[in-house]
Length: 86
Image (cartoon, rainbow, N blue to C red; front, top):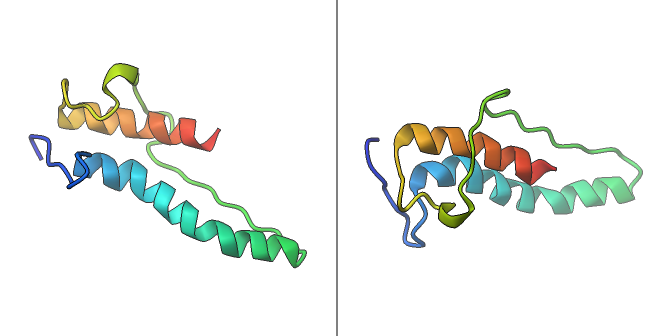
Protein backbone atom coordinates (compact mmCIF):
# COMPACT_ATOMS: atom_id res chain seq x y z
CA UNK A 1 0.00 0.00 0.00
CA UNK A 2 2.92 2.40 0.46
CA UNK A 3 4.09 2.62 -3.13
CA UNK A 4 2.88 2.55 -6.70
CA UNK A 5 1.88 -0.87 -7.95
CA UNK A 6 1.32 -0.65 -11.69
CA UNK A 7 -0.74 -2.72 -14.08
CA UNK A 8 0.77 -3.83 -17.39
CA UNK A 9 -0.63 -0.60 -18.87
CA UNK A 10 1.30 1.53 -16.37
CA UNK A 11 -1.70 2.58 -14.26
CA UNK A 12 -1.57 2.34 -10.46
CA UNK A 13 -3.75 -0.54 -9.29
CA UNK A 14 -5.40 1.53 -6.56
CA UNK A 15 -6.47 4.14 -9.10
CA UNK A 16 -7.74 1.35 -11.37
CA UNK A 17 -9.98 -0.03 -8.63
CA UNK A 18 -11.36 3.37 -7.64
CA UNK A 19 -11.69 4.95 -11.06
CA UNK A 20 -11.16 2.73 -14.10
CA UNK A 21 -13.28 -0.10 -12.71
CA UNK A 22 -16.30 2.21 -12.62
CA UNK A 23 -15.78 3.19 -16.26
CA UNK A 24 -15.56 -0.47 -17.27
CA UNK A 25 -18.65 -1.36 -15.27
CA UNK A 26 -20.62 1.49 -16.85
CA UNK A 27 -19.40 0.62 -20.34
CA UNK A 28 -20.84 -2.88 -19.99
CA UNK A 29 -23.99 -1.65 -18.25
CA UNK A 30 -24.96 0.86 -20.95
CA UNK A 31 -26.32 -1.64 -23.53
CA UNK A 32 -28.92 -3.16 -21.16
CA UNK A 33 -29.82 0.31 -19.86
CA UNK A 34 -30.35 1.54 -23.43
CA UNK A 35 -32.41 -1.58 -24.23
CA UNK A 36 -34.59 -0.97 -21.16
CA UNK A 37 -35.02 2.66 -22.22
CA UNK A 38 -36.10 1.59 -25.71
CA UNK A 39 -38.68 -0.71 -24.09
CA UNK A 40 -40.13 2.26 -22.17
CA UNK A 41 -38.48 1.46 -18.85
CA UNK A 42 -36.37 3.93 -16.96
CA UNK A 43 -32.88 3.04 -15.86
CA UNK A 44 -30.35 5.11 -14.00
CA UNK A 45 -26.93 4.77 -12.44
CA UNK A 46 -25.70 6.47 -9.30
CA UNK A 47 -22.21 6.30 -7.90
CA UNK A 48 -21.07 7.39 -4.46
CA UNK A 49 -17.38 7.34 -3.55
CA UNK A 50 -16.11 9.51 -0.73
CA UNK A 51 -18.99 11.97 -0.93
CA UNK A 52 -17.78 15.48 -0.17
CA UNK A 53 -14.16 14.41 -0.37
CA UNK A 54 -11.61 14.81 -3.11
CA UNK A 55 -8.56 16.78 -4.02
CA UNK A 56 -6.90 18.69 -6.80
CA UNK A 57 -5.93 16.78 -9.90
CA UNK A 58 -2.70 17.43 -11.73
CA UNK A 59 -3.28 17.43 -15.48
CA UNK A 60 0.44 17.02 -16.14
CA UNK A 61 0.56 13.89 -13.94
CA UNK A 62 -2.87 12.21 -13.99
CA UNK A 63 -1.29 8.79 -13.42
CA UNK A 64 0.64 10.11 -10.38
CA UNK A 65 3.94 8.79 -11.71
CA UNK A 66 5.84 11.77 -10.27
CA UNK A 67 4.07 12.53 -7.00
CA UNK A 68 2.54 9.25 -5.85
CA UNK A 69 1.38 8.51 -2.35
CA UNK A 70 -1.55 6.45 -1.08
CA UNK A 71 -3.29 9.54 0.37
CA UNK A 72 -2.79 11.40 -2.93
CA UNK A 73 -4.34 8.51 -4.87
CA UNK A 74 -7.28 8.41 -2.44
CA UNK A 75 -7.86 12.18 -2.81
CA UNK A 76 -7.66 12.17 -6.60
CA UNK A 77 -9.97 9.18 -7.26
CA UNK A 78 -13.17 10.85 -5.94
CA UNK A 79 -12.41 14.03 -7.90
CA UNK A 80 -11.88 12.05 -11.11
CA UNK A 81 -15.11 10.15 -10.50
CA UNK A 82 -17.03 13.39 -9.95
CA UNK A 83 -15.66 14.77 -13.20
CA UNK A 84 -16.53 11.55 -15.02
CA UNK A 85 -20.20 11.82 -14.09
CA UNK A 86 -20.63 15.42 -15.19
